[in-house]
Amino acid sequence: MAKKGEVEVPERGETLRAALREALLGRALTPREISARTSMREKDVAEHLVHLEKSLRKQGERLRVEPARCLACENEIGGRGRFTTPGRCPRCRSERVAPPAFKVEGA
Image (cartoon, rainbow, N blue to C red; front, side):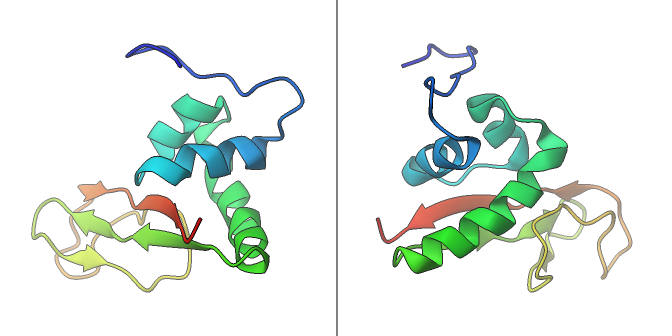
């Protein structure tokens, strides 16, 4: 187990998606936190989440998404169907948007 501030590198032979699933079992994580725990690029996290969601469905699990939230007006930006952070809030047009968080359920 890595100490605070250290990056947990996936064990040898473990795929990125397996490491991603393991990281999301405990609590909801943002793409930046996922990137730090799995040593994958933050830009690649959304693409891997799409494939992980399909794999989880086949195993009887699901990927829970806590929607992005506007920091200016507290609007939850959900139902987009994408795993990326929106560029701005659809209600107030603020660009201060907290990213979505992801968690594996049903394990």
